[in-house]
Length: 453
Image 1 (cartoon, helix red, strand yellow):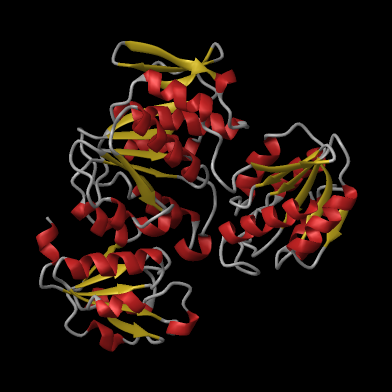
Image 2 (image 1 turned 90 degrees about the horizontal axis):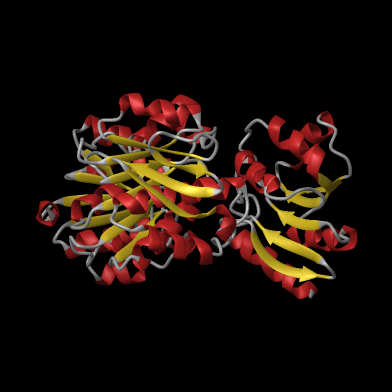
């Protein structure tokens, strides 16, 4: 199918990791490629110098409609909304508008396991990839983590498998994208500014299974009513996972074990007690990963071995250091309240919580109610600090502190923390007010903590 791009004039919007990768790949396939970004070259975070040498035309610092002249296909990077005027202009001209993951799908030879949801995507995707690798399959992991999916699919033949973390942004431009196995972990309000409302956000998520057939599998969280209800629209075989209900079929918790029942086969994969990753949400991630890996060909022995050794992913309830009896945790990946709720639930009490950043204006009621019961000190920073403080006060949270930046937050937490307390960075916010991304925020936090020791 790769030949479909040969000789086409293609405009790629967004000069970040995915855009740069797909521009280079499409040029290598014989397309005439222009890579455009509203930022100028000196404003970009990624180097585009090698693209010009490869024959990619660069149109930086402008995105006027003349870029569409003669264009056959418009490819969107995840950071580019399908609602921008240039996309509307392309659609009115009859230009095909697709996402980078759509390009990846059309190039892929191996089956794709695609995982989405509001929270838990990275952990579940990484865990699934490690199980399949342990099962002896040639496995590549990409998408919303690591390298762009269009780069990762290269070189994986039919006998292998591609495991992809897929965001709602990437799904906006999915046209024929059809993963053999799709998983939806949960659905809570997020990215409403991009998708306009919760219905738009859910519709984007459901595109992950829209093109599946009866030969494919859709793994759904039975415990999440919105996700469970997606089964009514699924053209594929639905497989549920549940942390709270003993299911007649699927993957669930029973008698302290992760149990799988499918087509008459009952397997106890491993005891819950062997999981290294903490928290009820990680039990759900493990259940989903086992389901995905099973239908991709992994046997229980590989699942059990990986679950017993998997330490978790960077920036997700990641232990950093223990200093004077106080353990510090980096949960920078918690960019919404629901994700931070899961982090708070992973610990019994006595938390010194560092939160705040760029506000997504999501509801804070449940988050602050839990903080009232579990948090000894709440340290707030960033653009969201004032709204978070007001919500915390309304819900009875005590000991609320305001600081200017992350360094000040770490310094204050150091003076406050005493055993059996722990310090948790779990912002419940995006990072873009003070950092380039949540990874940078997490790395800086870890560096600040390690300097303390």
